[in-house]
Amino acid sequence: MRFFVDTANLKEIEEAADLGILDGVTTNPSLMAKEGIKGAANIKQHYKDICSIVSGDVSAEVFSTKYEDIIKEGEELASLANNIVVKVPMIKDGVKAIRYFSENNIDTNCTLVFSAGQAILAETAGATYVSPFIGRIDDISWDGMKLIEQIANIYERQAGFTEILAASIRNPLHIVKAFELGADVVTCPLKSILGLLNHPLTDIGLAKFLADAKKTEA
Ligand code: G3P
Image (cartoon, rainbow, N blue to C red; front, side, top):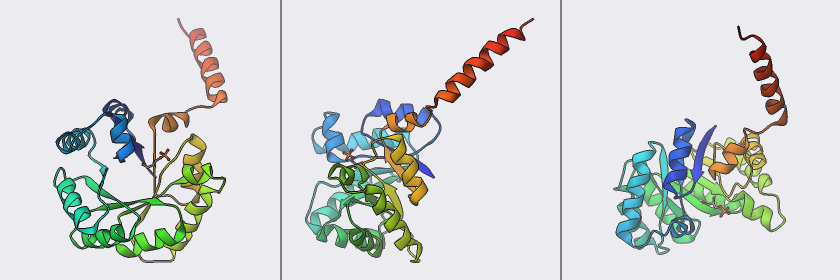
């Protein structure tokens, strides 16, 4: 089991790294925009800053949608740091680009995956990670977790190496279910990871232990 944080916020990444359980970071154009990062040079610098905090995989998403442009942009992103994973959308030119990157030893994260068929294409093209978007499927009243289970079952029968990176994770229960059903990695806001800490019996138990510890004081 591995945790990535789904953010471009350096403070949040530092806080997650400080927790000692951070394995990587995923970003997307919306998360970069949320941080107010503008212009190619600033975007590249921001990825370098993230990679200086995290030694695990850092997904950097291409903005291009045409094959040649995706290759150019992806190669530029991959050259920024050796832990950059090029995030490519699940479109026809994206699949073709994933195949190219795979043959040229550049790791990829196939994003915007909402069906088992798309996950099959990503795996066949040689994606390092496939990112099914759980929360967004739930948002339209379908069951995102069913997709995790389906992809895990399909991948288990194949000899491929693509890992399931459960994305669009919105709460602690999503994390538990995603791992339970076969996700290799979960990416989510730090808040959802910290939510796993909460249990009233832990709070009650700790209060009792601390009260009893006082009784043992000399
Ligand atoms: O990074 C992709 C994904 O995790 C986005 O999540 O919450 O915007 O659906 P969300």
